[in-house]
Image (cartoon, rainbow, N blue to C red):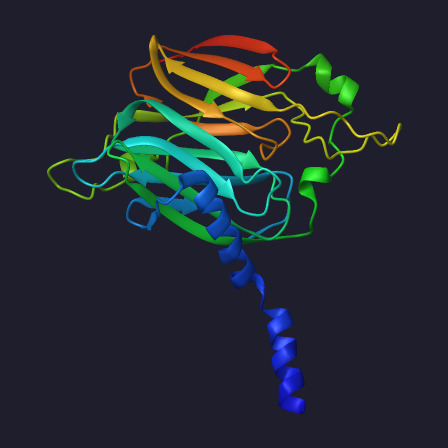
Length: 277
């Protein structure tokens, strides 16, 4: 009897991997059909916390280095147990050998987090990690700013170049290629784009009226360096309130253009002139 009780208790305490796998099986089939991403830490370097203490604003990032002879076409950030699991998609304007990003996201509760990279030949590579949270319900948590006040600064964007890494290079410059014959690109600088947007999930309640706030979030972000398109980010309610997005731009860029559109059709454009470009 005692052994039976202990076995039952253990089954209750350790259900997460089973449910996470079942969730992923369904998601994978829905997103990728019959294709099965290859788990590879050599191709996808995932940067997530073991535990987040700020569930509504958790920074998640990754650096993808394509295998020799292949190029990155797009990258998807997937948070299995979020209401909108496909949290962000980066479609690259041109296939790249290396792509690096991070963004502030909502994690609705303990969940597997995955980054899946699609290559120009259709191959899929993935890395995954389980992230513990300090609670549940980040997507329904009350907004940090008054909804009316948030509309006053909606669409304001700020852009900054981040200080060089400890080795004096950008994020990508510190990478080593999978092939000595094809080194990773080093001529880049790390940039951060801050967007003022409440990113309402449709699950949040106005604390005064006690009515649900209509869904409204960042839908697309188009980024170009000088006159060359870099990528298009497609967002979701998983983007945090006032999201911050980090990415690489060419070292010699003299200007960065950003066009942001939200789900209500509001469009905002900014061109940032860079010093030292």
